[in-house]
Amino acid sequence: MKAKSESGGGYVRADQIDLKSLDEQLQRHLSRAWTMEKNKKEEEEAQRPTATRQDWEIDPSKLIIKSVIARGTFGTVHRGVYDGQDVAVKLLDWGEEGHRSEAEIASLRAAFTQEVAVWHKLDHPNVTKFIGATMGSSELQIQTENGQIGMPSNICCVIVEYCPGGALKSYLIKNRRRKLAFKVVVQLALDLARGLSYLHSQKIVHRDVKTENMLLDKTRTVKIADFGVARIEASNPNDMTGETGTLGYMAPEVLNGNPYNRKCDVYSFGICLWEIYCCDMPYPDLSFSEVTSAVVRQNLRPEIPRCCPSSLANVMKRCWDANPDKRPEMDELVSLLEAIDTSKGGGMIPHDQPQGCLCFRRYRGP
Image 1 (cartoon, rainbow, N blue to C red):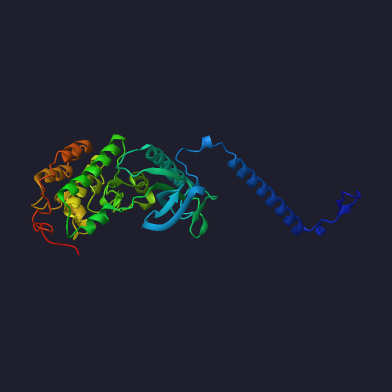
Image 2: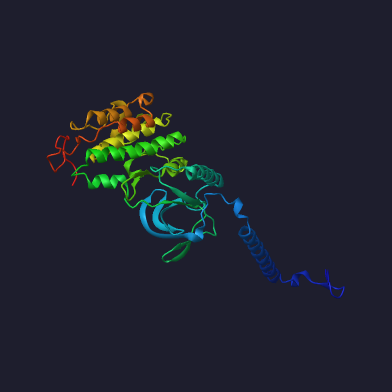
């Protein structure tokens, strides 16, 4: 049987057709078509009107990433420069490519976009200033001191102001032996209370209030960090465990798995207030399960030193009431702290002694 030839009206044998050659030609054709389509999309992207860009989106070409400041479960925090300004850059990683379904990634991206849109509009001296973010794409190139590197498409980049004073927790650890003057204690607590009061006024619940998440700027002003991203991270169902949250700061209703509201932040603030005053850790000798059980079932709370002025001790006790409805609102706590007279001294450092107070239950730390 012969097949008809295009040229001479005759036929060619089917078994003489070079299928491999045809396959290679088809592959080359498809490759050219794919490249042309990709180039067309890139041109369209480049010509996209800037008005369609979200107002919080950064220009990656203006970003330079430097050394790592911290590493966490969901990514790393770097020092950096954006458009000439010192910044902190958080690279969020939602898991390796292929390890999440498209629906999961879409859900995470939607939550991220929603949080970033809220964070971008916040403006308060005790909340870390949000500068911008990017959802990431396969074309994203981030400049580093060692050249350019590409970011996987599942990486999200968040840029905030850089706070050179570091975490409040580190500052308290440095002062564990000497303790802080009462005036400094109240000022740090006021900064935190004002920041949380502002967030609550904007209908934002932090949900992970701890001294580790509070930063100090060059004037030792406390600034709340990670309030939006922390909530996104905790909402990731693949990473939820019995220990989601931070040991020692979680309210009983959170530990118990019950519904909770902004009053869980008030409880955590009370623990932070104790920590600022004592420059120590709550429950250092207990495991997570022991703390969980004792806080919920035995009403365990940190021991307040005898030298603590009653005005401050009463604030702590009200904040960590087992009943969320009995805890004060953050704006009331701001008023209570503002009313405390710090001119007479008091607190952990007596006037006539250079060392810290000795009435604390037992001396701990280096």
